[in-house]
Length: 108
Image (cartoon, rainbow, N blue to C red):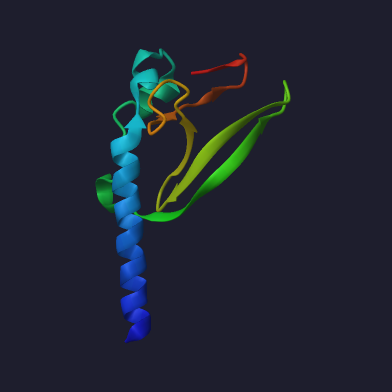
């Protein structure tokens, strides 16, 4: 019984964290992009379809061709892996969803 309660409390906490990430997600950079990958995700709702947050944590993403390191937040959902970049502007509580363009040294 105790294990059942602990599992449900943990799942409720993860669901709450997912809602917080949804509210903090800024997709405006994708809306401005002409990339076909960006157009797939510009209306992304990370809580849709019964998605569940399985794990979250920090990650240092090293881009091989220029040795640049980007600090990102990783969200492992039941059907999706997201790499979120912290907003460098005034609002430090927002995250950007970006895709990396391998041919160019830019984010799409």
